[in-house]
Length: 160
Ligand SMILES: Cc1cc2nc3c(=O)[nH]c(=O)nc-3n(C[C@H](O)[C@H](O)[C@H](O)COP(=O)(O)O)c2cc1C
Image 1 (cartoon, protein in one colour):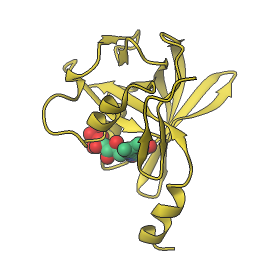
Image 2 (cartoon, rainbow, N blue to C red; image 1 turned 90 degrees about the vertical axis):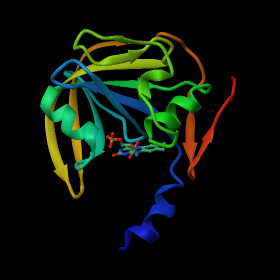
Image 3 (tube, rainbow, N blue to C red; image 1 turned 135 degrees about the vertical axis):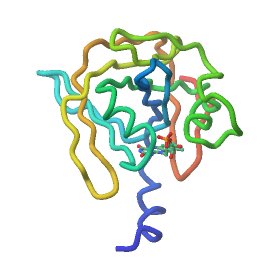
């Protein structure tokens, strides 16, 4: 099936929105918006994210061996757009308060939740790579309604 026809079908699947972050060799930060975050196992604690293999984030995670998943809140639409390259220019980390988790990967101070991981495995899947992470640390800094994405639209500001 052609991807042009498949995209609008897959867009009907509503997801949360996460920012996947990692480090360069020199300690600089990088990250991207991802909806493909999934919990995989509890023992050992494993999560996955599916990334475009040619993308910068996928390459840098391969180099660093670490990443964090930041679950965005209902008021984090600007961060979601920024890390998806949908905002103009500049440092993606210019918006939001970021600090380093124990692996060194950046985590958002007011994320709904974050998990900090070491890469456990990388599985090529077509033009994407399934990255499996062994969770080293995790937190719920701000229990709040999540940011939802459906049919290319962010559902922002939805309170409980
Ligand atoms: C809501 C949303 C979810 C996304 N989810 C993914 C994803 O799971 N995997 C992926 O490879 N790209 C995803 N993207 C696209 C990337 O965020 C975008 O291509 C980004 O610029 C990649 O950055 P990089 O090339 O610096 O790694 C998503 C975009 C949006 C708007």
